[in-house]
Image (cartoon, rainbow, N blue to C red):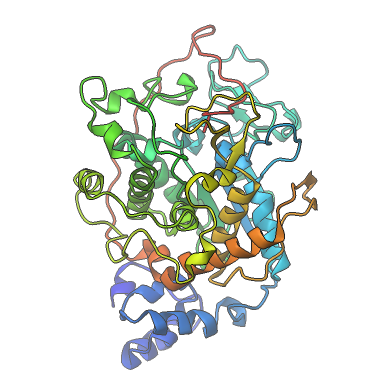
Length: 489
């Protein structure tokens, strides 16, 4: 009854009979089979074992069994910044590209994937929104006050991609907000949303920028895909929970790198950081920052997102699941109206096999992008030479977490980057033993808690505040952004 009240319908013709069977039997596995979407397993049970049993054996759309390849590829669009497109490390050319890492993992385990990305280094999700990036505008030159045509190594002008005036991008970006509606492969099954690396920990920006953006994407996807076939019965918005910096926030104010990507030109105005240390203290250590990001991204399940992909929690597990200091946890929790969708979890998630946490202490630097021996990092106090972007290892962990969450399967046994070419891009190479450890970490963080990650259809919905207005751009008024390495995410 709780599910039916959400307005969800079984993807079969005999829906009334299926509904009667489910309500009469109270059988959770029957419910999963009828609705064909894993997130619905949250209601009617508190037994995780039963939920997982149903995940493993329930019938999905078209008679498919979970764990068996689907006839149709998963069509997925990644929207984000350099955390998604994955810049190259020092003295290398291979990008740590999440969409291609994800495709490598999924297809090695028998699931076809068609992927595209819309990525702008250093930018906010707010500037990707379809309402401010419609197709068909006249963007013939960059003096336009409507839009700027995109032209770089990843996007050709013939693709018809454009960005808001003043938004800068680099050579490794793939800026194309119009891909949401172009749907080159057909209707999207999943649209992944990822924001600026610090923004979800700034509650004012979370409410006025991220929440309206997620709400808009959810609404547009529902409207555009209302009469199309989807893998999950409807198009899914998935939130890409990002990770803490190596040593936590290490800054008094949020700041930004590309003012044109933020309506105020900065995130500082959403805090009282000029007169108080409250915000900086709430993200001062990596367990605190990771918790702040997790709470912020989880909150988006109340604004239309259906899935939470817990990458940041997997990074903390890989780093040894250090306890969250009670003072920062209490300060972060006080910023939200309720306990939130993660309230049923004991955070940080601890690994059953603690030997898998091979990236404790200074070893955690291996999860971050190496920028060379002369790079003076602002992300650490121990003389490290990494920034906040993922290394090949970090991005591989992200891809494994995405696979386990979206397919509801263990990623153990997946292939790993070894120089393969995926969708025209050569991947880097990582160590086999590291790869296998990361596979088990992703399994332990994701699989036992699938009902939580897929709970977006069941949490109470909230109305997003109105989106902030964009200032009128004028030629010469924008700050120069360029390629965003070393803090541009």
